[in-house]
Length: 199
Image (cartoon, rainbow, N blue to C red; front, side, top):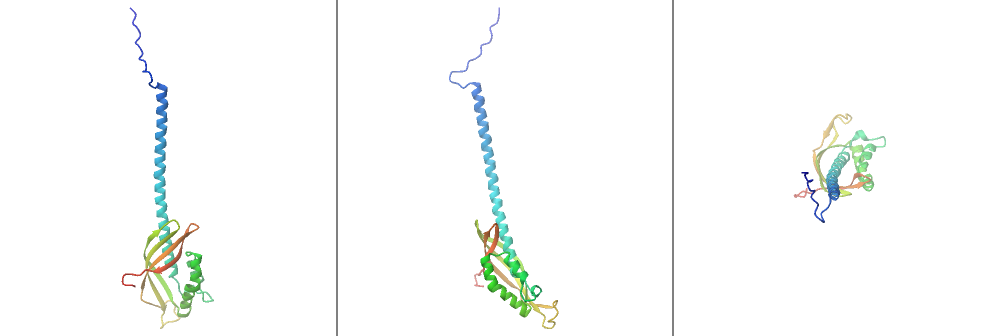
């Protein structure tokens, strides 16, 4: 007696066939991979944006510190034969806007040159701290605290450049405004920060 072959079950009517299932599975896998890729890209963009923002803040901090150091560091060693401070001028104008440079060259620079040439005055500064108060795409405001010390030739030894008399140290607290110009933060203005006691 011959045995009958086992019957092959038929797929129910209306059910998708095997090939359709494979295609559907492939489409779902591709969609899942695309979604995962988009998620990774979005996360990378967010991290890049955060890193970019921190980088801009760091640039504002560095430029503010450089501005304070350069503006408050000068002395007789920098005078040329015409009693000007060309290196001082160049260093300061490198970190400020052209508008601010025009004001500096009209008022701040002549005062510094005059006190150095006539009284032998020198100034040095130490930055205590800098913080970013606000920042957006093209402008920022920083707060800086620093201490500066002036010095004069010793009246007992006026010709000896190594003998100087320090004046009392003073503390400055400034609000510094910066603008982004051609990818570089430049100082556009500054003003003393008043404390609660009005100082």
